[in-house]
Image (cartoon, rainbow, N blue to C red; front, side, top):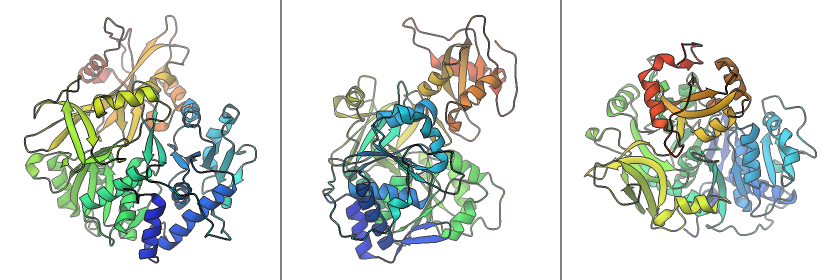
Length: 532
């Protein structure tokens, strides 16, 4: 554990196989030696620009090698990277930058339009570094913006000493979706991130000949831990794409020579729903990791059609991956797998007492190896204590364990919605909608999607004597939140069901929606049913 820092692992692999390709991107290749040189160069250039070990630096970039070298450079320097969802804007983006106390930001030029209006409200944000990419730049990047070329320019003395970085130093602050409150910044150490890559490699049997493909965003733990760090520990290669495209997916897989890829449930369904092709088995992929797990019959269809073994896992930003589903018997269905050392999971009731096999409860996690789970939520001591109550991390997820030790995910105890791979805070969507002058109250709940996972459904109560139409409300949302957060369904109702203590009974709203789907306004269909 004490040797597990990003810089140390990268240096080790660079010395062991300097010419081996580490990164493939749009026809280009970067070797391990070059990746190590770039990481060190970015670290030294950041320090020259005034960034120091321990500083928090927001990274607001889309998938590109430059984002990876930025993250690697920050890790080598010992600064803390704060990767931000590129869809963030408005109050949510301001919250991320302010709550993280970022003293610098590295951003794609076309995303700076979302940052610039907030600069006067961010006195701690002293340095703005802008990368002009393929998309058109915004008009103005703020005062004294520094060009990204300053980070990747050659360093005269690459042997210049940097401060030592320890396994216990925080490498990342990763924001996880807020559920009953604002999003929380998860403190992830170097030891946690690198052990996550090591355990992923061991559990999945990755080899240095493997090419791990990802089109998932690098600001998510999935792409960073499950692909990038795993490839780094295996001595394999990362094949990076800008984003998921069903039309481009298999061409990317074939051209990169990928042997493994990760797919979110909705993404895997989209891949499976593409028209059959004579090239369906014209690839080198041997493993596909699907989260959440496919039902057994769907997994069998995927394997039969594409000739790929299906695996799955259960993980979280806070606790990496304690469950792996590799070589799961068909009769175990959509299991998340079994525990791996050094984790424990307790299926518990609301008082943290363990439940018998087969009963559904919240999953509580702890780890016997130090530094392998998160070190708390940044600047949120109350939330940290609550999450780690009684010595266990409370995941907010519910499921059960069978008598053979296989775990099955059932639902989320938290008020979180998962849509196309994104965890959405109902609280944050509600907060934005509630600011409309015609809205009295709003409750946001998940609604089943035809692609799996959830769609966002908003129940809205208008103020007396005021109204807002569905289209107007959606336009209002589109201006104030990320695209994936915008509700698909809207239902106007007279009042929200509540308990005597004034808590909204969201389960009643979900039942109402499922019982009367025809009364939901669907922005994709443009329908406007009768109101009730």
